[in-house]
Length: 75
Image: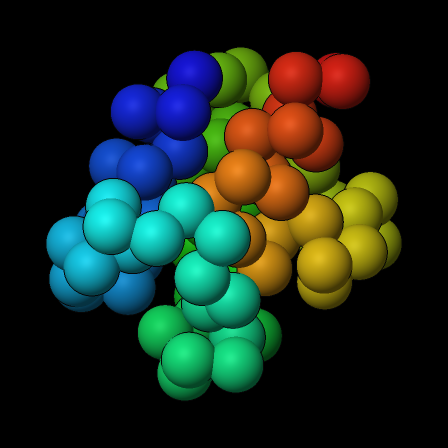
């Protein structure tokens, strides 16, 4: 699952630097914004078959690779 989440974030952010630091805050680093959140949610639905609304998770749930992997593991 972690590799798929990394692939999603790489595609949306356009960088592979997230692979080096799985706890990098994507919002604070400027790699993810509100439009990026929507793109990530669409990719999650496409790849994992999990339909999520922006209100289904907190911003912190998507702030890092590790946070999103943990969130998706509970779904």
